[in-house]
Image (cartoon, rainbow, N blue to C red; front, side, top):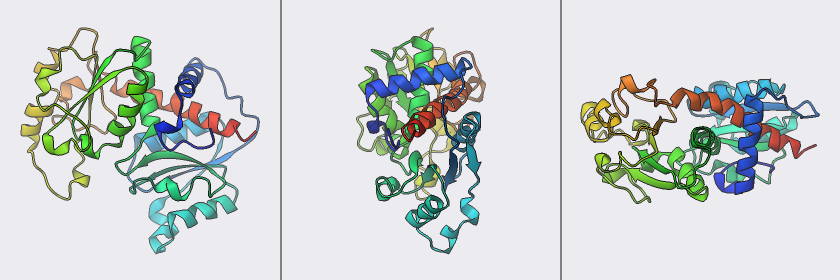
Length: 292
């Protein structure tokens, strides 16, 4: 694997290899990389979890991390993403983690530049490492995704997480269903009554309402959305005893999830964030090992 831009880049065997290596890192194993590599994180959209998680993963792998701040880069002067990457290639970068608002931005880079490209999120398209950490979290909980019913709720059409997970979860044998307002379903088949699917779900994955992608339109007031599509305390009480709550975050308390449920016994939200470091270590190591 030379790059990772989509979950479609990974075979089932490679997904399991990443899960196993993530677990090895969690168990205290150290990296087997033989060379000293230099990486940089190019984030053109706001990020806390993904950006900091990647940087922690890189430092745990003893990589040299070259800072990059999009707000102070030559992209503000009109430099293209391709030219920015070529600059970083010229000064010796081995791998780049990129988040960009443009869907499929990586198509102009992969196969045309030397640094490995790891997609930290493209527009509403793909978020492969989030999908991998979600898989790892479910795998930790149940030992498998096979026949698990995973319900993804919220702003489906604008969610790169939903798109990445729809493909990956299904390939791993899970039964994936979507719940959202009819105007937010995009290309997905979805049900519109949340209460109909709660009791038989093994995982409820809540999604943030991405107002920044709605062109200023707010079809629901916060309280209205919470009552119709939010995970309320009343809905949580209807969940299966073994079922868990997930959210890729950032989360809006009192909108897609009740504040009291963010850190309840069912919640794996902060476990997802913790798992992200180990999964990203595994992804980076796998890619850089291909260069040795």
